[in-house]
Structures are given as structure tokens and as C-alpha cells.
Amino acid sequence: MATTPDIENEPSPDREFNEEPAAEQPKARVGWQYTLSQVRRDPTAMSGLVVIGVATLVAVVSFVDGVLFAYLAGFGAFASLGVEQYAIAEALWVSPIAETGAPILRPPAFLTNELYPGEPGTLAHPLGTDHRGRDLLVRLFYGTRIAITVGIVSTGLAMVLGMVVGSVAGYYGGLVDDALMRGAETLYAIPFLVLVIVFMVAFGRNLTFAMIGVGVATIPTFARLIRSRVLSVREEEYVDAARAAGVRDRNIIMRHVIPNSFAPVLVQATLQVGVSILIVAGLSFLGYGAQPPTPSWGQMLSNSRDYMLPNPWFSIWPGLAILATVVGFNLLGDGLRDALDPRINN
Image (cartoon, rainbow, N blue to C red):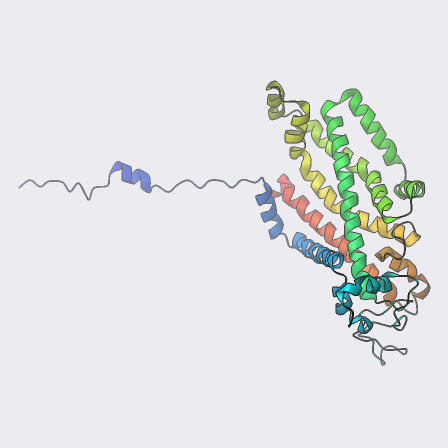
């Protein structure tokens, strides 16, 4: 007896085609998402990011409300002050003349009578006091605000101006390249600190001109870096296609040349923030950076010179703050360099 085939149980060609596993698409190794994923996997970069995040948080909070740090530092004399008396409290913290009434050169809280023969430390001043009785923790927090601002502003100024000079010089070449890069090399030939100090003597010895001076002196570094990238990017096919389509040179530079040359500039900018912090701290130590009564790490180191041997904590805390912040930016820069380097990620 003939049987009819079971059509329902037979696999159809369409069903077999639909059940085939889809080919796994390769993940793109470009873009900000991929770069961030690489940074998250790098413990070195994450360590630097944690240090930078803590320093930035301290800087932002100290900028918004300094009264918070008076309570954190345990200022007993200021415990009853209200927010309306913030200006009076701040003047007492940072003024080189006004005294807080606290014992001068008090050691940190962990130095007890057994460890320190003089007056013991107290939790009211966890890191001790300076030669005028001012709490070192509060001044260290305020110095963080100065350091982060100086590093970001001076590096941002140098990066923007350097990218403009380098990209224009590399894209057009010829006389434009010669004129711009010879000027940058002339600026580069002058010793860095000499150039910044001359700039501040000419325009003013304050923190604003210190940031501008450091930024101007760093322009050749970014200009030379991005020019070397633009020289190769301008020969790419997509740039030729944009020219053939009639796109203006300005739009080509802004939309195609600079974005595709930005990776090494970002790495250099991250490293340069730490260098700028270190340079401005050195200028403050020499008296050319932040001026009293503004507290800064370099100024704290300068004030501690006469008390360094009998009272080493006076110089240890700002020194550690500078070290930790600079190392944090360097670690992040190394992580970004590894994440953006195609030879490492292939």
C-alpha cells in the first residue's frame, strides 16, 4: 500500500537556511567605545584614572564650598561659623598675615607624645599646621584646585593653538609650512622655564599669566606632533575625494584631517597636564606662580624650606600631592597610548 510522504516532518530548504548560525561579525577596533573598553581593561590606566578622579573631585568641591573642608579638617574655632561667614573663614585659612589661633607647626595626628617630643598631634588638624598655625589639610585641598585648574587650562590652550598651527602647516605645506614651523621651532629653542618667567615678568606675576605662559611655551610640542600626522593623513583617499567633491579646505581640516590625527595629541595632552602641574609648582616655589594669599603646593613647599629638617611633614604633604597627581596623569596617558596603538591591539 503506497504511503504519502510526511511533508510536515520533512525539513524545508528555507528552514534549513534559516537555522544556519549567523556568521560572527568582527568587532570594530576603532571608535571611542572600543578605546574606553581597552582603558577599562588596563589596570595601569584605571589606577591613574582613580587618582585623577579623586583629585578632580577634591578640586571641584573645594571650589564650590570651602566651608566643607573646614569641618573635615576639624577647625574647632570655625565649628560654629555659618555659611554667611564663609568669607571670614576663608580669609583666615589662606591669609599669610591673619592667624587662626592654632599652635604653629603642630605635627600630624598620628605623632603622639611618644613619637614626637614637642606638642602632640590632634585630630583637629590631621596633617598638622604650618608656620602660621593654618591647617595643612585645608590648604592642601585648596592647592588641589589650583593644580588641576593650571594643568587643564594651560594644556588645553597649548593643544588648541598647537593643533591649529600644526594642521594648517601640514595640510598646505610649502611656504605656509615653512613660516609656521620655523616660528614654532624658534619658540621651541628657548629654554622652557626662561620663556615662562620672561612672559610673566613682562605681563604679570600671577597665576593667570603663569598658565598662559606655560600654554604658549608648549605650543610647539603639539604643533610638531600633529603636523607629522597631518602630512600622512592629507594623502589619504578620503581627503582626495573630499577635495574632488568641492569641500572647502577649512572643512576638510576640521572634519577629516584633525579627527584622524587626534589620537597621539590626546595621549600627549594627558601627559602634558602632569608636566604643567609640575612646572607651575616649580614656578610657585620660585615665587612666580600663585601669589599669597592663594595657597598652592609649590608655595607650601617654598614656605617649608626653613622648617624642613625639624618639621618634615610641612614639606612631605605637598610633595606627595604633586607626586600622586603627576603620576596619575602619566599612568592614564600610558593607558591611552596602549589603547590607541593599533600595533598593540591587533
